[in-house]
Image 1 (tube, rainbow, N blue to C red):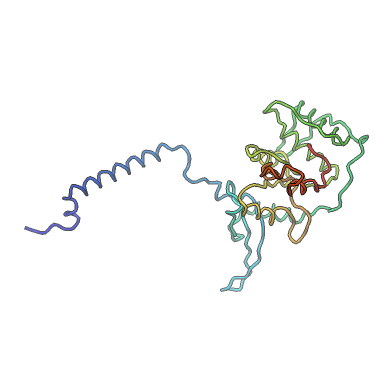
Image 2 (cartoon, one colour; image 1 turned 180 degrees about the horizontal axis):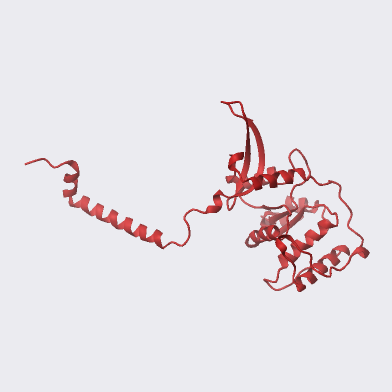
Length: 273
């Protein structure tokens, strides 16, 4: 005779056998579940650089060699998940975008809006970024917006959904910039559309658009890194997309006694839609 080892003794216990059976069944079900999933468990966007926010020049403690770090915002992740990365690990194209933005400080002087009689109808759509051009009815909408802007008159686009109101608005802002008017432009939109606004801005123009959205930490980072040039009070963003619930978070802000209401009234707005 001989002694059973510990594992063999455990296997003789019926309770242990049932637990092992249930464990194997759960593992098989889990493997089947993951095999049927169409989506990837890891979003590859999380390791793709969206934009560079800041640069830091340091010195290696061991070698004394200069080291450059960049603060990186990752695609599909909020600003609060941004990380400092070595220059060698950051997409060079994104570094160049950051450097070009910091080097392109515009004239801080604000020009007056052109007189109404200087408006001229645009007969043919210009070619925007990626070779995009406006359709005929979109060009008509752009001319309508520009005509009213030159004449100091607010207006509204009432096209059906899907006809390109966002594109018309973006190209309108682009045309305004071409007249020499300084940005930034403030766009107030519902949560369901802010991603589309950002995507269309980047598809049609090279304007620097910032979406002011996220947790308190993310919004603080946007204010710190995205609103102004380093060591300057000159704004970096050409357009800022803001959720309207950031302006009207409570009933008090909708009244004349509300602090937010009074702050909004102090904005130097040249035109509103």
